[in-house]
Image (cartoon, rainbow, N blue to C red; front, top):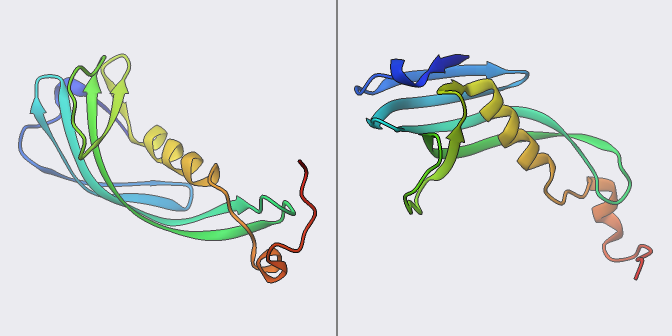
Length: 125
């Protein structure tokens, strides 16, 4: 789902967007002429690869998202929210979901089989 920055209302609106097998549910609203606040939960499943053996597993995703979407370069210092700078004044929620999923996939994951071996595996130094 895409929405132009100028069309985001100042009153809180419900947000439900599904991308692949994951959806984002919550609320969003404009809090200043150049900032949109999104408070939502990312839920669903995604495939992740084991860092040791490369096998693919399904991971349940259930993460709270507190985002500030900035129309252009953000010049504040908000620590409670993750800030995403939006290009061309167009908010693309599918792209935001995909970015969050890629962040999850880039973490260090070990499959159930490799966990059984503990530290009993070859290490490269």
